[in-house]
Length: 629
Image 1: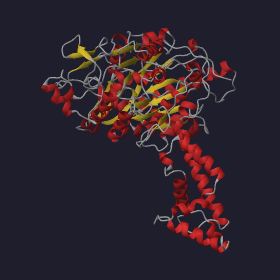
Image 2 (image 1 turned 135 degrees about the vertical axis):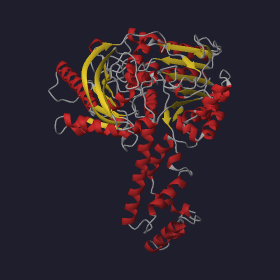
Image 3 (image 1 turned 30 degrees about the vertical axis):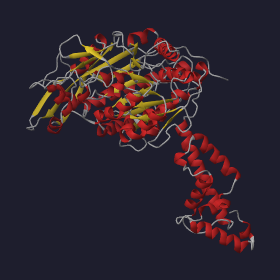
Image 4 (image 1 turned 90 degrees about the vertical axis):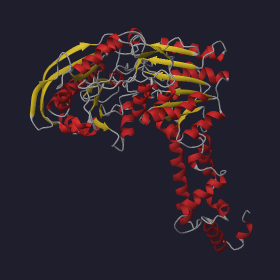
């Protein structure tokens, strides 16, 4: 049974209209900027653009660049989603590619990361020069404008920016040639503002409303701007309203002279010199434990209510019950938070219910996938891996135990809970709940979300002596100087976030449950490669036991080499999806031992061909003369 058709939201209809106008030659547009509120779902926009442009022959292929490896499979899934394939009538597929030649492997495009492009810029540029590409740059705000290419920066500002060049600037340098070569460019972002005040690579700017600022030019020639604000998304019921649970507290610590400081309150009208060390201490002591407990209680209460509403027994595991996302300040405290949560869970459930995904955990990608796609785990602890782009609509509660207070970062984190869960029932029965420390930095972030569009770039300025950083973070020297002693929670208050101004991003979630996704190409390729390896190993064991294979070490590698030659000289890592499927079918019909003669003359494997010929002569006199040349 085919999935039911899905309605397009206003920004998706607008994007499709722009793509069709380009395809018909009615619009002289090469750049499309989609500023869609975080949590609004941008993942369908590349599909809509690609469908119209590929069908019209404007582009031949799609390249989708994402900021981190965990988002590559989600990009594949956007093209593989069966409901959208049915609704839109498209058959396009992309694959998560490594830095190897022919990244598309017979499909319509590929997905890579900023890091992947920076590691092999010439490989990707050569691909763009061979084919007409639609380039999709996801979360483009990660790419800072390059100082030497930004004429609006005065020399002193250029020097400041040049001094601050980092990994992100390296990404910009690597992606700039692809932007220049692409036939059509689609730039996606949930915010048009960078935390460091710099401009964003490639975006058009004009003079801002205040001195020293620039603002994205929404009417720049050659550009089409698609805006989808949080207010619009709420009006269309595409995102959930947000309720904040602000927890006040007080903290004590030792300063750099090892003097006891405090207790000091977190909640003050304005930041003071004690606000940042108080927050630093609170996230590492008893205050954090209290906030974790409040978030866990809220999540378990929600799951119990939904079980009752769905007629499920106590303790039953199912989709749509709601999940808890815990964002920690660092990996050490992430592990501590996980231990604390597991102590509060019933015996026997802790290991499967609560998991951790950090850059130092070997199974982080598998954990993130399970959190997104399975009923369990229902609690995920992370630092930064899951805050941006994580498509897990079941997240209903967030414990924001992070020190970061930049608006773009926190908007992305909050958006993890604002996706409409198609398994949770009606829209009116859902809401996002975010627990956080009640500090003035977070209050400033909420105020900016409610009153600003966030499209400005500011010239970097030399920090003033004693000026407080609205990020709320301590530098390395301050962190090393502070010794947290203790903290405790005082009061919890709730407030609902106002809709905010127009212009900001999100894909529509549905009331009906999503159908099963088609298996993404990358996973199919991995499975087929593993299957081929198992089939080769099986033939080696069978032939050796029947004296049909050369005896000794290295036989498996010799069989793989013979298979490679028999199939045209491509290794499994280089094969396209169709070629891998053909290899599996070939192995089902043929014995590799009959093709070992292809190894003759290769000093690495010639021994196998000679031994095979010799053994067949011993077993069947005269047979050697019948061997194929």
